Length: 609
Image (cartoon, rainbow, N blue to C red; front, side, top):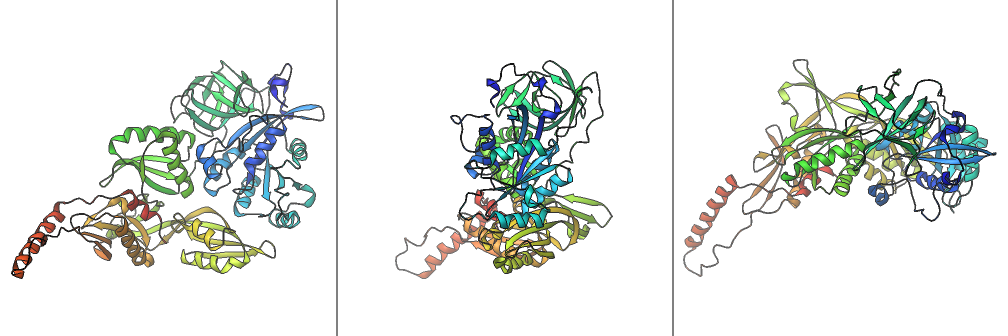
């Protein structure tokens, strides 16, 4: 039902018992955004004229890649048994790197739709998201999507869901979001099964800030859930974490674009503009209250822990200010990115950024380039290491170039993960070999049904941050799915490997590797760098070294002018003299010459076969 067609529409008439806040959770590509489209259409929130696929995927990067990166909110108005209900829908990402977005979104909900593909079945991220929702005690509605596909097998998937989540057959809903089968039954289930918000409208205003983004014209836009009381335009409010006072300039619903309503009441979810200017003010998980009526703040969220660190530098050093402004604006939209300044001998001034995973890093880079038009170089990713020094101090090392000397180190600890892999049984051998090569230790292996297994592995995070996911997909023909959670730190035999060009270490190319793999990785890196470094007028020696010990070397030969071309006949000593003279010149040039490193050289360190 479209709000515009309702006579005397007033949000005040919607008591908490007529409000349902729910989220859609699923593995990547199981149809979350398509289901969100159908719900928006069925409730006439968007007309079929203005529709385009994946309405809530607003970012260019989301449309290009066909993935959801940012959780999005939309308010639907639905008439059920003669009563109007407000349904607040939050569409969440499905990739493992964005589980922080999912956990924040679930915090503002009372229920979740657990979506499973009728052909692919339960995947690793389905399990992870189910347990996130289960821990927060949400009402879970299990839904099997894509039942119209030729290879759909809902009965088999229902058995899988019963085994994995203890979901009974009569609780399951069968739908096809693409063609609209079962959408009315799903809307009825949302109203009947999901609990209304628990807030009290007579208490003073208390609001949870669960998301925010930056708009160039209006400043910071916050998404809030009204826990208790109500808030209207012109109110003076205070943020609990900073104690800063704001005035409510605009407030309303996301319908699915911002629709100003002038007020929000208990249990409702909407946007708030209060003149916040800087990135730091909108702390996700913060509590808002009326300035003269303080309340006990909500517990908030655990801050996101970045687990992949990389350097971001402008291609042209004079663009440093532009890159800094772009990163500042983008980190408001993505508060899970950790940023600090750093400088590199090879690349000049830049930033050290922490990300939740490699796809997260890739998307951040793409958004910087697309949305802000900056040209950047991203260095090789690394994970944070815990180094116990001989004097008993413990240091966290995020940048390989800051790794201390071996003589000062007592022990190096690396972050470990518990990995869950779901795979068809015919690819089991390939996956066992892949995990073993990446220093994984198998902890569990169970059958989900007669054809699919769940593998659990304990692995170092360092081994999966580069190309593990790509390899997993290629050895399983794309059928295996993967999810992981960080478990803690364990001691390991790690060493720092430097890359030297003509005897000079390039700090941006240094990496931390396991001692057993150092020779193999060093040889591979030098070979790859030889292919991407352009030939100069002098010879370039590329070496991989651990401390003072060189473990691999490649040479890029010099470009040479044929100085003997003018010698026709005569004594050989004339030619020799010219060649010796050229040799001396090359040697002198090698001492003063600088090696120009192309951007591909830094990307080379990213991928190791």
